[in-house]
Every structure is written in C-alpha cells, then in structure tokens.
Length: 114
Length: 114
Image (cartoon, rainbow over all chains, first blue to last red; front, side, top):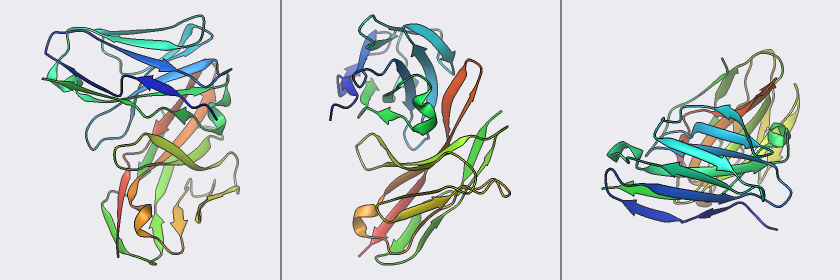
C-alpha cells in the first residue's frame, strides 16, 4: 500500500540558507500535518492543512512557511536556517478528521544545518 | 490544554520480561489515545489505538486499555523481545472546532537485552 512519501530523506544546509521539504500524502488523504523532532525529543506540531487551507498552527517559526497544493502534496519552506533547526521533520496525513484513528507518518527528512 | 505524561526512560529489560510503560493524559471530553513506536532511524508507526473509554488496543503482543477514571493508557507486553527495542510515544487526539492535531508524550526508550 502507498505510504506517505517525504523528500529528500537527508538534507545538509549551511546557516542562513533556505530549504524546502516535500510531503506526498497517501492517495485520497486531504489533510497533512508537519512535525519537528529534535534529537531525543518528542515530535512537536508545526502546522497542518486541510483541503489546501491551513487548519491549525503550532510552534512554527516565522522563518518557516508551508502550503498544500491542488494535488494535496505539501511543502515546508525554511529560510534563514539556524543550527537549532537541525532536526527530523515528519509529515503525516489523514482523511479529514481521520486523525482520531491515527495518522500515517512518512519516514521523515533529516535536516542538518552546519 | 491537552497534554500527555509518560514515564521517562530508558527502560532496560531482559528478553522475555514483562513490560509496562505508564502514560496519563489531560484533555477535555473524550480524546482518542494512541501508542506510536519509532525504531532507530525510522519514522513513527502507529502501534495501537483506542477511541473510547474501556477500549483495549492491541497489536504485536502489546496492549493498552483506555481508562477514563484514571486518565491512563498504559502500554503492556507480556514478553519482550530484542526486536522491541525502540522509542515508544503515547499520544492523544482531540478535535474541537478547527483544532485538530495529535499531542505526543516525551517518548520512552526501551532497550531489551538478550
């Protein structure tokens, strides 16, 4: 079965550079969630989209932005990268309010800022 | 707001030992509860879930019962294996109006030694 696809798997950027992370949800899933997981920490909610509109916002820095496109894939844009942005970034998808039955997560993008 | 409290790790057990990882939650109403597992270098995988009080979620020998009276969702397994070594996250989902996201606990690292 198709899963949530994230790209790239690994990304190395220098401070002050820009990065774009992509997420392709499970087919027919219309909701996408982004989480950030620092080393040894629990995932922290960043932002979510439902039907291409932002549905909720968490601890996402102003330097970050995201959107969901007409094919339901989502991109997380990160600018002016800082060392502290180094983390594993997870995308998850669900169908509408299907979060009540659990999300399906992608394998994540590991971002390293040097 | 919603929150999840789970025991800190690491938890180190010998193979075939009994496992309990405690999890309690704070939320209004009736959230859905989950356990996610994260193996080294991988994304989060949904292990089991319970969507209403007294429900028991089970999968791969793991069990957890939704206890409304004690606001708990403790994870148990009768006989752990080395392959169970991973980080386990307790989580809850609560939908209220436009607010929909999963809140994670800090994660408990389980190490099973032969």
